[in-house]
Image (tube, rainbow, N blue to C red; front, side, top):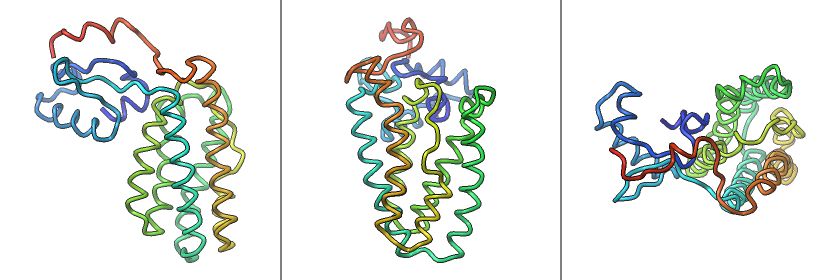
Length: 227
């Protein structure tokens, strides 16, 4: 269900009927109920005691706050990485960075838009940033970065084409390898901010600071339907 939300198959505002989801996933309602609770904790689903659960609708203002949080947290990770990571750890991260940057170059072409639609780029990019935080020992920050990226991904689907890469993952590692914490922090912040500066104005142009709503509105109404 998380992946379906990230990829836009379950759109913001869509009511998630337990029986429908159970049939879709070919399982009993019990694990679906537990999944909805976990997704609520992650911020992807909101649950109304009276009407049930639906995919959370974020406002542009809230998305901007998420973006600011991510810039601050990941900048901290990069700074710590420059101060603590050894050559072996950097070599492992380099392998992930190379693959992620290869996919980034491909998805800038319209012919490779499927890389975005099936979540391939998102998964490799998430793996890199999560691994970087984990290698520095910042496990609580790693968990929060994971949550923030998932939340942002549900809204960035609306912005096409994706932002071109300005500071690659390889360049972030180059900065970290200098063991200059301030340089590494700047590289990471620039990497994230360039993407934010691409999609946030486009969302504001369409929705102001209000809710980001898209897709089939008929599916998002009738909260009294069977749950």
